[in-house]
Length: 445
Image (cartoon, rainbow, N blue to C red; front, side, top):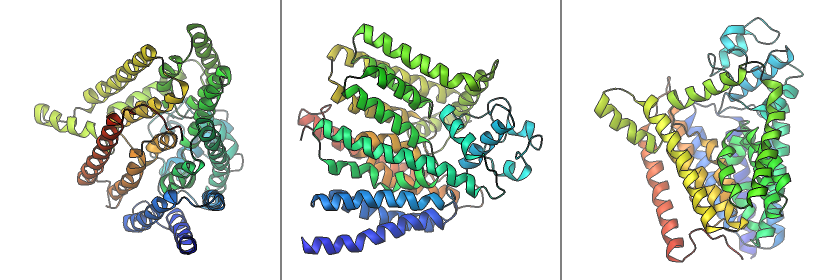
């Protein structure tokens, strides 16, 4: 035990150094400075989550995870430029302009704060905003005080994200206790370097989406479907993706309760979205989402395989065909899954596993999978036996090599290795639990 303690006292400061170094020092193009400390930090993370000492150690590691998030509040996002669009949208609202009304290039220099300097940092200069209301509410408060270096706005954003992460860790403990699972499992999410760096360090609103998703799951486990319906609407209002979970959730409820659940969620979404949509602005949001599916590509697994087939047949990139087909396929698979669940009449405890499978389906068929996209399956896998999201979180950071050249260039060998290992580990896990008769069962001890 004493030797184990000494190892912890050495590894914990090293882990903290690696996280803070990545959060404060390297630019997006500094791949070596990113990946070496990330690999070290990730290996220490694997050791820490396997450490099963007494409760003092668990409290120490939870305190460490919270401290890391707190210290990153004061770093400026250095691995993502999404923060600039958040600031742009917030400043639009302070000028009484809906963030969905114009593309940035149409109104540059016409309103206070929407200047050339901020515009030059945007990665979406000719696209309408795709960020839902919760993001816009936070953006409004974060840009009350406007600065030329954007650091203060960043700090305010991170204070909101920090609060959401504290809530997620707390809810994680409550859900684990309800399911009869070991509290140590919360470290899978709380200490994961990708979660800390991408959600907290780089300001991605998966943090809010996960918080409200966990509230929705917790309320379902406690048979409080009305609260769950509102929480799920808030999750969708943070990121639209949790819409995929509604067909799965309704299979747990009676017909009457399912209808009430959808009505409450629908009304909540209407209240949240209405202030931002004047006339036909909602269609501009959907136009940007359609453009996202038909044009953007990054770290796509199955999509890249199909894209190569498309090149061989057509001689050009057929993303405008493959993207919608994959999106429709995702919807069909999730609906078929919901039909299966309806016939099987599963318990609410198993819902989390099916949510994990549904979101995994979306990621595997997506044309774009940035590192922070897998944070949702990392949160969900915390309450299951499956650990392929954890493996994925260790591999996907290698895609930052794409930014190490003067111009963006995607290294497809990295993508191939990443997905080969992830698929291999998924097959390994699914095979083990299928043989054991526990493919869709959660642990009870």
